[in-house]
Every structure is written in structure tokens, then in C-alpha cells.
Amino acid sequence: MTKQLSQILPAFKNTVVAADGSTITDLSEINNIQISSLVFDSREVTAGSLFFALPGTHTDGNNYIEQAILAGANAVVFQGELTSSQKEDVAQAIIKRTIDNAISNEMPKFAPALINVPDARFSMAPLSARFYDNPSERLIVIGVTGTEGKSSTVSFIWQLLRTCGHKAGFISTVEYSFGGDALPNPQHQTTPEAPIIQHHLNEMLENGCKYAVVETSSHGLSTKLNRCGEILFDCGVFMNVTLEHLEFHKNFETYRNDKANLFRALDKHNHIKTIAGEKQKINSIGIVNLEDPSATYFIEATKHNVYGFTTEGKAGKAAAETGSNATPLPPIPENLRYMTARNIASATYGLTFDVDADGENGIYPENYDPVQPRGKSHFSVKASLPGAFNAYNLMAAITAVSSVTGLSFEEVAAKVPELTPIKGRMTVIDEGQPFELIVDYAHTPSSFETIFPPLRKRCNGRIFALFGSGGERDLTKRPLQGQIAAKFCDVVVLADEDPRGEDPVELLKMIAEGAIKEGKVMDENLFIIHDRPQAIRETFKMAQKGDIVLLLGKSHENSIIYKDYTMPYDEINEAKNALKELYK
Image (cartoon, rainbow, N blue to C red):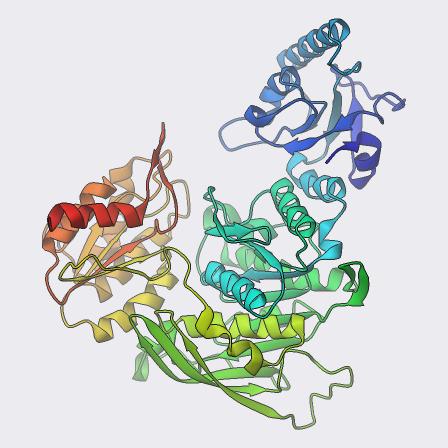
């Protein structure tokens, strides 16, 4: 895809400048510059690229403008004022490009454009959307947010759309699809930067998709980063919101507020889209987990209708609380339509439950009267998915697919047996070892509180939990991780996740503080073995028949990030190799 600068400059506030910072008012030569790709990493610049020079935690993107120009960038978007040395480097790079252009028959006969903006990162969304002709105007878009359950719910929605006969693509932490089979996501990033999202949506459109499902993280929904700023969402799904990412959001209120931007986005357009060449009005709806204390906050974030779901506290964290320890479930708002899961039965390889639903589908009639009594539908759900918590994910997915396709809840639920779990989500590894081995992505205090209790109930032996915590991320969750793991597990082994720039052992000691507070004793039932492959092997040596071993936090990810290097890593393959070594 190629665009002229004149086609994309009107999409965002900008000033075209010379290398010395002076404003260029005559854009006649600038307007016709051709842009063939959008990049924000100078190492990926090719001839014809537009390069976004982004401010970073460890470096300033303005330092790489010279490199981008020499690599062939036709335009650079940057913020702030260049330093004297940066101006000199950029001027020299432009002179070199101009000379090269003059003596080359292949190089274009113009100097690259320098585009100054108030916020380079924020500008990526409007510019990218315009570059790809606003693909979300021609796709039915479902967004899923929450601290836990996003990736699984996105995958289930995508799979259900496909099994119901619809072509769909998706973007998630674990995988993505442009309409074909799911492919592994190579990045440790839930919601990619705006140029990547808009590219992916455009690819889905080009491949004939009608639907796009997007996992929307709090970073992605933040107006500060603006990754999802130009996506026209039709359906928003809220799973839960707990303590996470406070290194970025600073406090819970900001974190929750950013997530609620998904529901606010439903009110920003009229949901009249051109799908497969035909203009149509898309049913727009919010979907909320009614057991989360923030459910009402999200319901009130949109003027659109909202449909809820609940297990009445019979799955997840609430299921482990009894008597005086039980946290009361938040009241369900009056006149809200919702579905309830009952008779939940979960085992290692499967899950069943019954549903009582308000109405036959997730569509609100035009003449909907919240006061009038409404019909009920009853159906059963059977899935080859481990974990009672998947009842939440499945109810959300069934409601979303019903709302955007018009199919009944029962028709969609009938396809649930065909669903497959995503890699690294309660993945059972059985190589004939005497103990049960499960790999999962759980890495937050709330996800620990969700997965540990049901395992504790059914485990006849000991539970081993091996995990770590991300470096340069929220510090407050670390001792909480240790404390919750120590409460439910017999042995806690702390190992590297992604230490990044932090000292790996010092990071793990912060987690250990919480485990010690809960009564664990170092080198007796609490171990720090920062080398993760070694930690796995030492844990397997301790495990016996009847035990359950949990490898948590790395899951689908393909590397461990250290300060000075990134180590290729595959948790599932590492576990299988360790088992083969131990039980040859």
C-alpha cells in the first residue's frame, strides 16, 4: 500500500519543518512524497517508510532520525525540539540523501519530510488509520478487556464465529489471525502499537473477513498511548479488573478508567458500517462480568445497552470463599439483562454447566422495555476446556457472538464442544510422569486466586508452584504473588520470568517476602532458583505421585528478557525436555 503525504497529513495535527526547526509553509513539494510503510523502529526502515521517532524509557527516538533518513525514510514524525547536535546530524543526513538522489536513477528526487507533532506516539493512531483507509469502518469489531481471561475469550469468540460460518480475524497476546489459521504472536505485547493494529485490521479486510476480535489491554486503551484510538468498536467485553500495571497507570482508578475507554468507544460512532460492500447498522452492546465490583462502573461508561453474565460466585476466586471469609457479590443493577451459569462441573480435561439466560440472544429489541417481564432461555454448555473459570470466558464469548451475528445463545453454545484451548492456558503436559503438570499464564495476584483454589480442592498430594514476576513492572504485586501462592501451595519455587533491567535474584526476593509472611521457610518449602530451566528440573525432582506442578507466568511467550540479552525460551518444550531427562 502506498499513500501520498497529502492524503495522510490532514489526519492529525502537525507542522512540517526544515532541519533547523523552521516551519515550511509551502507544501507543494512535500504533498507528493510517497509513503509505502509505517515503522517506529529505525532498524526496520526501508526505502519509502514513514518513521515515528518515539520517546522511550531508555532512549529518545529523535536520536534515530538521522539513521532512518539514511536508511531511506521518506518522512519522519517527531515531537519536541531537536537538540543542536540532532539538527546537525539530520541536516547532514538530508544532504547525503540529496546527493545520493542526484546521482542515482532509482532514488526519488526529493528530500525527506520532517513532521513535528505535539505527541509522536499519539499521532500514530490517526495517521495509521488514514494510511490504511480506516479498515474498522468496514469490519464488525469486538474488543475484549480485563486483567484476566482476555486471550482465552478472544480466542473463543474467534473460534465460535468461524464454526458458525463467518470469516473472522483476531489479535491477542498469544496468537493472531488475518482470517486463516491462528499464528503465534512473536511479541510480548497484548495490544500492539497503532500501526500494527491498523495493518492487521486491513489484512483481515483484504482477506475477506467480516469480523475482527481485538484483545484490548489497559495500555492499548489508554488515551496517553492511543493504540486503539481510531478503532470503531461495535461490541465491548469486560471480564474483570484487579491490581496490575500500576508502574504505568500509577493507581487503580486510572487503570480502571483506561480499561473503561473500550465501553466509551461504543458511543463515539453510529455503528453504520459497510460490510462486504453493503451498508448496515451493527448491533452494539457492552458485555460485563457481574461478579466484578467494577461492573457498574463499566455499565455506566456507555449509553449503549449492556448484557451481563455471572456464576453467582460458583467459579473463580469467589468459589474458594465460604462463610465469614466470603466477599459479598456486588448487587446486579435493576432492569439489566444477564445470564447465569449453574451446576458447574470442572475436571482436568473438561467443563460443563447449565445456563439460564434472559432472552434468546444478545440483541436488545428496538422497542425494548426494561420494566416488562422478559422470556428466558435455558441451555447447557459442554467444553473440552479445563478450569471452572472458563465458564466466565465462555458466557462472554457466547453473548458476544450472539449479539453481532443475531444467532441465538443456544445455536452458538452448540458449537462450544468444537473449541480448543489456547497454548499455555491450563495446558496439561502428560509424558507419563507420576505427577500432574500444568502450564498457565497466571502471573497476577487475582489470577492466582482464581486458579489455585479449585486445584487445592481436588489435589490429593502436594501443589508445587513455579513462577516469577516481570522486571520494570508493578512492584506492589510481587509480595502478594508470594503470599497467595504460599497460602494455597505446599512448595513455592521462584524463577525468572522477564527480569529485564533488574537483578533477577533481588526481584525474586521481593516475591519471597510474601511467601515467608504466609509461613514458608527458605530452602525448605520456598526456593529461589532464578535460572528457569534449572528451576523446572529441580521442581520435577521433588514432585511425586499425586502431586500437581504448576509452571506459571511464561506460558506461550517465546523468550526470557534480561538486561543485556534476550534468551529464546519455550516453557512447554522446556518442561517436556526436562521430563525426558528425568524419566529416560
